[in-house]
Length: 159
Image (cartoon, rainbow, N blue to C red; front, side, top):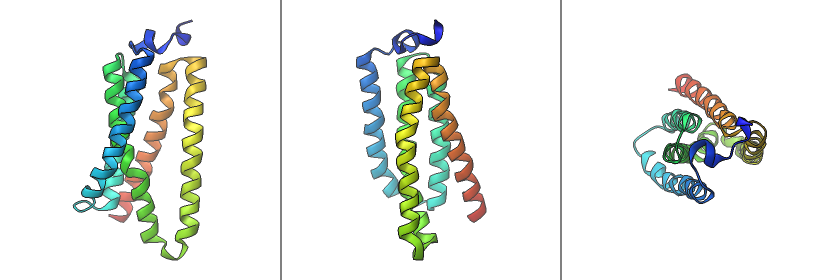
């Protein structure tokens, strides 16, 4: 069936290309962590999280719309650099806001992050197997969209 076509058939990504695309995600993610530390000298934390969340929606939209491995790589890299700032900066915001409860808040945020890091790839893998790559890319898009809404609301509320 059309949904069960391989990633290579859908966007031209061979297993080798897919490995390089995944590697590029982690490379820009890591570089993004360094860059974000510098950006915090110029931007408020909430603005960085909101802009990063919006960037993640753009990257996820590229993944969703990708018709080539080049576009897939671009989407992965945009998501990587965008996701780099969200988690650590959110931890910093929480520490600033709930100083007396920092341990509890950190525990909750770490637990939520680990659950997402465990469940999202599993869901995407199963969705890819049963419905195809294109349908599976709705999962990261939906997640990025929800993060974006929450981050923008938080930024506007406390700006």
